[in-house]
Image 1 (cartoon, helix red, strand yellow):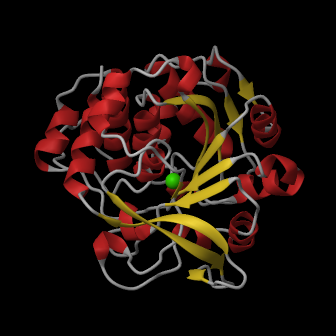
Image 2 (cartoon, rainbow, N blue to C red):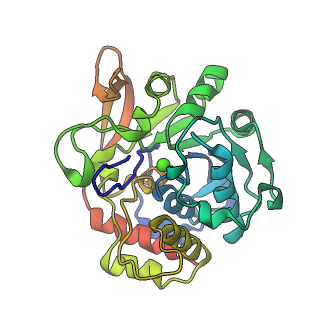
Length: 332
Ligand SMILES: [Ca+2]
C-alpha cells in the first residue's frame, strides 16, 4: 500500500492454508523431508514495497516449504524478475525458476531497488527464466499434486491463471496478502480499500470468486501490524546469513541509504504473514468469512455471494510471531 505522508508503500497479501496445530519449535525440529514439504508458487510484486523481499527470504528459509516457482506481478515485471533472480543467486537458490509476469504501466519512482540490480542481468541466472510467467505457473501447477499459490502483489497474474485454467484452480490452495476487514495500518480501526486489491479491482474480483481448493488471506487487520524492531531487528542485523544479508542490502537500497547501516527497525512486513500461513496459523485467530471484492476495492462479508475464506483476523501473540520471523530470517 502507498501512504501519502511519509510515503510508506505497501501492498497487501496473503492467503493460506490450514495447518496442523504444531508449535513452531516443532516445525524446526522436524526437519521435513522433500516428500512432505509443501510445493509453493510465489507471485510477487517485489521491488515496490520492500516487504516482498523479506517475504521471499522468509519463504526460502522455511523447511516446511519448497519453492517451485517465483513469478513477478505488475508494472515492470522484468525489473522485478531481476531482483528475484539475483536474490536467489545470493541465497544459493539458483535452482528455483523465475517467471516474468504480465507487464503494466507503473511509474519508475516505484522501482526503489533498481540500484541493487545494476550489476546483474537476467541472462546471468543459471536457473530457468520463463518469459511467459503465466504459462510457467500453469505448468508448475500441472506438475504437482497439491500446489499452494501465495500471492503477495496485485492479482493480475493470478486472475489470468484463473481465466486460462479454472480446472487447475480447483486443485490449488490459494493464500494472499489482501484486503482489510475491520482494521487498517498498525491496528487502527476501520476497513480500507487495500492496495493489492485496489491496483486492479476486476482482477481481485475474479480471484476472490474463483473456486479454489482452499483460500486464505491475511488482511491488513493482521499483516499491517508486523514491524521488527528492538532485539528482533538486531537479531537480523547481526545474523550475517545469506538471506539476512540480501534483505538488508535491499532494504538499505530501498531506504535510499545503500552504504549505511544505521537503521534500527524494518518497515511494515505485510507479506511475510502470507508465507507463514502456508505452514502455520499459530498465534493467529482465524475466522471463516464469505468474502466478495466490491467495485470500490473493499473486501466485504457477503453470505449470499461470497466464497469462504480462511481469514487471519487477529493476532493472539504478535510478539511470538515477530520472534519466529526474526529467527527464520537469520537462519544460516
Ligand atoms: Ca507485495
